[in-house]
Every structure is written in C-alpha cells, then in structure tokens.
Length: 71
Length: 273
Image (cartoon, rainbow over all chains, first blue to last red; front, top):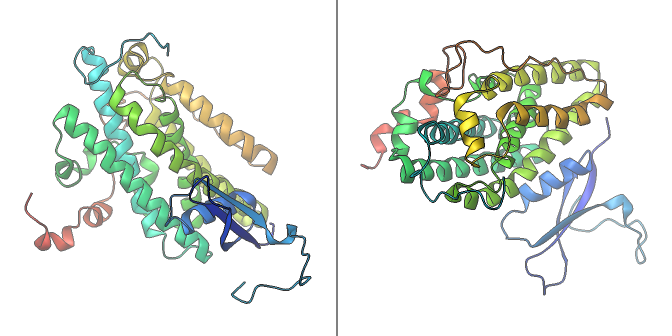
C-alpha cells in the first residue's frame, strides 16, 4: 500500500480569479486526494480545484522548508 | 435516445408500464440513496483516518440531498408524500439494494458499499442522461457532478485495501462480491416489461442488464490488475422478482436503521406537517 502523502489543494471561485492555495489533505493516492479535497473544502462553489503532491513541488526559495501553519 | 424522441414534462402520455416503471425507478433510487446516506453518516465515526471521516460526512450529505430531490419528483408527478415515503412504509416495501439492509460490520464493507452500490446507482443515473422525462433530466447534472467524488473515494479506498495486506485484500474482495450479488438482484431480470417500456419511451437509454454490464466493466477495470476476482451472479435468475421492491425475496432495511432514519426517538419534537 502506498503511504499517505500530503497533497496541496488549490482552487478558484471565479474564472477571473487567480488560482489560490486553500489547504492540504493527507491521502494515499490521487483518487483519495481528489475525494478528500472536494469533501473537505466544499464551503465554496469552486469553478476549478486541483491537488498537487507536495513532493512534486520544486522549491525556489527555502528549499525543503515546510509551511509554518501545518503538516 | 434520439433527439427527436417524444419529450415528457409529466407522466401524461406515457404508457401505463412506463409511468409505473418510472415511479418504481425513482423510488428505488431514492430508497437506495437514503440507505447509503445512513451508512455514510454512521461511518463519519470509526473510519481509519480523519480525512475519510470528513468524506463520509460529505457523502452522506449529498446522498440525502439527492433523496430530497427524487422525493420532490415523486411528489410532483405521482402525488407521493415524502414524509410517508420515509416514515409510513413497512421495511418490506422499501426498494433499496439489499446489501445496505443491515449495519456494515467493518470498513471493507463500507468501501464495497461506496465502490459497488454507489457506483451502480451512478451508472443507472448515467443511463438517464438525455432522458425524455424532462424533470428528471434537469436534475441529473448536479447529481452526477457530485457522484464523481463518491467514485474517487470508493476507488481510492478499494485500491488501498487491496494493497495493504492479504487479509485486507480478502475482506475487500468478499465484501465487493456480496455487494455485486445484491446489485444483480436489484437490477432485475432481462426483458423486464417496465424497464423495456422506459427504454422504448426514451426515459432511459440502456436496459438494466446493460447498465449492470457497464458496472461490471468499470469494476473489472480497477480490480482485475489488483488480483481480485469478481464472482458474477447471472442476470435473469431472479424468479419472483417484484418491480416495486426490486427484490426476488421478501426483505428490507432493519427496524434499527429505520428507527434512526425516521427520527423515531425524537418523534415528540416533530413539527406538524
């Protein structure tokens, strides 16, 4: 079984709005990350939502540093 | 379904078999979604991780929302009373998929309900896209959009259980096959008159056995590579099948579940209708 990993969640509420970071989920695969993101951050009517494994991020500032706010 | 097929704003003009079939279909979908909502709600507490608890709560919410929508159609077009549909029927009158009749014993059983039963219903809803019954067609987009996340959740967890260890894989496989057997019964026999009338009138685009085949293809695509074997019960071996309950045998949700669904414990607080 794949270990759970952190996926960062991004969304936009309107097509004219920039894609913004809305939070993160812990999930074992992409399917669960999609389901968890959609069910956890459902307070808005998103026109676009996507998830990205944190491991896929290529940092260009503080290499490898985790965000101060959480997981 | 062709674009030129007759469109129905109500049941007026439908054959008796078609109108009866549509009522039974709407009722069966609402009943099954009601029971799915119950189980998802129950499993807000006790799943293996917090994210799954939040997902269960959300899945419950959408299923119960769909029940309200389907009950609205039954009220508007068949004069049904939504309160009576939940509170006034005997267990044996419910047309839900029998896999959901009892409390689910473990997480593997909940995953099978999500992955097989919920997906079966979604597959059926897909066969109603472009339906000649306009009120239903207009309701489908929202339901199907929400169901996409139910599928992701079911697929993700089924894959996880099968990859965890042999015990989990066996539990997932056994639960999946029990769910498929129940779904087979619910879809009913081939050449069922009401189902054929619905397809002939363009209310549905595919017969129930065809929808069941679509479902099996979906499941096989996921579970085949995981080494999980589907034991398919043959469609059509359903002597005594009742189109109103979609069962070949007497049954229904447990009194315990209906007690909670009906709010019986808090009946004294109910508002007068």
